[in-house]
Image (cartoon, rainbow, N blue to C red; front, side, top):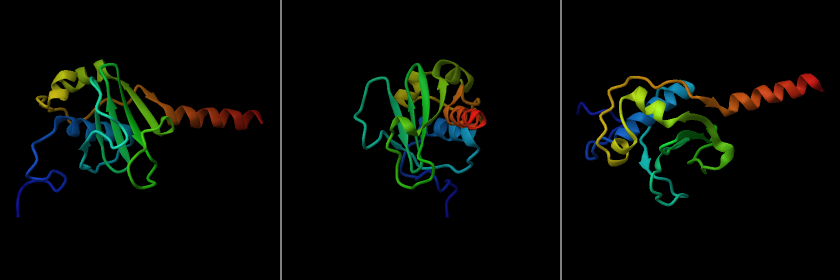
Length: 140
């Protein structure tokens, strides 16, 4: 028996972007689980100035300008990271300021995340789509 949480394998170093990803998921929809994230995504090549963490159901993509959560709506397997899966967006500079870190520190793995929550997303695309559909139905 160990004191390590089940979501963090003991033989892997802590990953600050994983910690951020978990905070973002909670801010997005309240999910309280701590998924194991892999670095990158099978359908994406490594790109400079892009940080990706993926688990089943969600992928998080961060650039110096924007941060997005891709959500596959629980259909199982990993997100495809297609535009229809983008659910919410944050402006990265303000997000990172609120978390007390920088993009570079997350990118090189030296960030220390002490925040216990992330701000709500700046843009909730799925909420906007639902609102637009409601307006269309009212007009019909």
